Image 1 (spheres, rainbow, N blue to C red):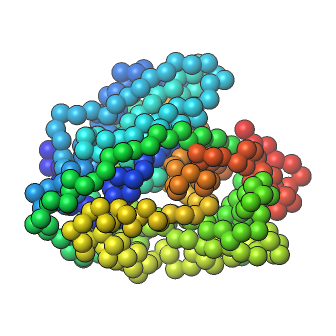
Image 2 (tube, rainbow, N blue to C red):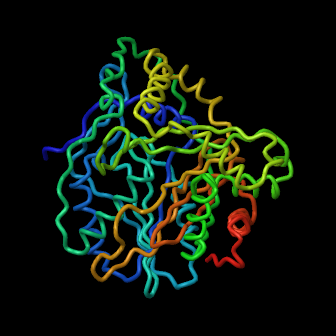
Image 3 (cartoon, one colour):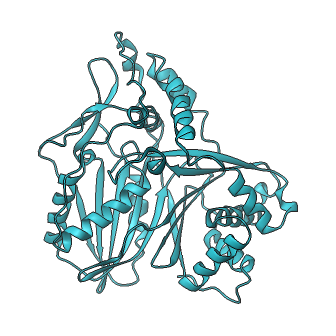
Length: 411
């Protein structure tokens, strides 16, 4: 193979690797597909998928200089778990199991698949380590898998550079004294995250798009406002506190990157306090304004340099981990992948909807809302160790009211 991935981790990849020493940094997406294929056909498609994406052969290990690196492994396949169930089975239960099952990042591959076969519908869950991938990556894996099932050839991609390398920044420092490595702890706590989902019909989704544009904001801004309004109403201890809302931002555009399975995001906080005095669309505009400039190369470079200062300038990995233990104290994350960037017809199979990202993003009380639009419908998920009951329904009700819709339909 000419597309083997062997390199040091970039600064943000290394940050996720360090965070994974504290708590699981795995995530998932789920695709609802109209139609069925044989298990053998899915297995063959996964083999072709793996040949296309170099990171699907990679594990993370320490090199001779005590740096975490991506290392290619031959002769491995993507694990596939298969269930045959009735129409009423909740796929969210399998997503919960996947998030509760940690990846051993020193073993490849860092991706698992779950095939849930209903009488006429297939749900495919892809679970990944966040060290090597982001949510957009998994949407491209769905596309490539369905293309393979439809008989299309998948061209092998070149190994992707780290974001640091893409920006012309040097790799991690060489560490000559590895004595501190033994102090790294592997005492992982068990997690039992809960996952819920909801789908908003196209008519309401389209009205949301139009209304957000009329109000001088974005759909993401409106979703943030709806989440903020709903959590303040439903969790009383958050009704008047200062709230930190995190948004992941795709870095593929600013860095002119391809569709590789890789980690290509930044994250950005917006703080809200006293916004209850404003109307819904003013809050949505505040959410949009708080993310101004985050879709630029300059922002990505500043972001990467922050984590380079944190993770590249010390030989003591345990010290870096201890610093990171105090990070990520947000109450809300809204991780919005926007609109699916490809068609949804794949021969005898049709991609009906994609849900996610499904991810634990903090220390346990936070609510992580994933958003993605496909076939004109907005799909939302909530993932939390301590979920707010009825949160997604409240979000959709808030959006419908803000759009002056007479009714909404969500399934």
